[in-house]
Every structure is written in C-alpha cells, then in structure tokens.
Amino acid sequence: MSDTAASAATSAEPTTASAAPLTGPDGTPDGEVPLVRTLPYSGWGLARSKTLFLAHRKEPVDPAGFYSLIAADSVRQLMRYTSLTDQLVLDVGGGPGYFRSAFLDAGARYVWVEPDVSEMEAGGIEVPGRVRGSALDLPFLSGSVDLCYTSNVLEHVPDPWRMCSELVRVTRPGGLIFLSYTNWLSPWGGHETAPWHYLGGDRAAARFERRKGQAPKNIYGRTLFPVSVADTLSWARHRTDVEILDALPRYLPDWAKVILKVPGAREIVTWNLAMVLRKR
Image (cartoon, rainbow, N blue to C red; front, side, top):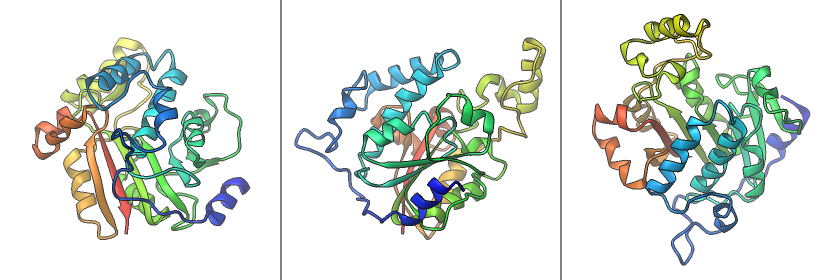
C-alpha cells in the first residue's frame, strides 16, 4: 500500500451511513443538485437508461467521456443511501482513476486499488491515492474504509466470493458496500465477444480471434468469468455480517427492479446487477 493510501485508510474517522435515502423537499437526495447539473438527465427513468446505453456504445473511442458520465451517475446513486461528505471511499478496480473527480466533488476522500499497471496509466492521471493490489487480497486494514465501491470488476476475478468477502472485510461496521457487475447471461455478458457468449465463452473467444485476428481483451476463463445474478443474491442473503439495502438493475429504470424476483428472466434482463450493502 502506498504511504498516502495507508495514511488515509488508518486515520479515517468513521462516519455514519444512513439506511434510508436522504431526500429533500422535492424528493431528490439532499446535496444532489450540483451533480444533477453535470448530468444530461434527471430522475431514474427511461431517459437516464437511454443516455447511459448510448454512451456505452462510445466507450471504445471515448473512454474518458463514458466513465466520467458513469462516475457522476454512480455518485448520484450512492447519495440515495448516504452522504459522501468526509467519507473515505475505496474504489476497487478503479483503473486509471476516472471516478476520482466525481467522488471528490461530492466531498469524499478517495483512494483506488488496481492490479494492472497498464490500466492505472491508461488515463494519464497522475494524482495521489493510487494503490496497486488485487481485489482478492486488498492491501487495506479491516474496517478501514467508510464506503467500498466496485464497478464491473467481479466478472473479471477467478474467485468472486473471495473478492466479495474482501469488500466486506475492509469496510467498517455501519459502512456501505456498492457492488456492481455485468452478469454472464446479460446481452453484454461476454463483453466484446457478445452476444456469441451465449454459445459458450470459449467458442465466442475463438470466433472473435478468427474475425479480428487477435484475442479479445477479456479472455474467457482467464480474465472473464461467468457470474450469475442468483448466485450473488444468494451470497449476500447468507452473509450474517451484511444487510441488503437495495438490489437493482443498475442501468435500467427504478420500476425494472421487479425483474430480480423472476428467476431465469433476471439473468438476461438485469444486464448489470447493482447491490448496496451495509456492514453490520
């Protein structure tokens, strides 16, 4: 762990996370207004979903623009459950640090951990708070962070439940864990090999290599693994040290949350599962 991150993780004074959304008179989260002005939508309906999906299509050519949008949206989501002011946020799998500005603007203290040096340097971001380390063995003390955040990492580790346990371990009692990932049977489950992953991960990877003349960035069985919605919900429900505050299809409207109650269909329709947990 870097000296900067070690100091932040060990000296942070815990703050109290609220289980209920913090809302103002108009029904939007308190303190959200500055962030809303940076987003091209308001509310949690179809306009938001459309904007996010269109931005996703541009991610290969404009990663900074896409991830900046997702970062602002993530902060807005989290502010439904807690204030981020003065909270120490650990971003697990934070890549080059695209999310840093959004969390700092919300008043949080921010550090991120990333195992891949090339990913850390991809955005050309040279600021304090970067830590090289594995999500399977986080280089942070137990109970040292107020909020543990991870986006689209779980499907890239060979032992997802060990990673989930690490997220819980480093979070202080009363702190929050935001876990979001692309589930395998979603339309984007195979990432750049989708939708051929429905015929099998190895077959989809082989097809990609034949057509593109190179292996996919996300190689099935090595850097891409199948994780289901059902298994993740079951993992959380069987933990005695966490409480599920919310579970939802991350990029879909709020009313689509009901799909999580439908086995089978939820594996395809959810697209990306987001869970908000509170450590007991």
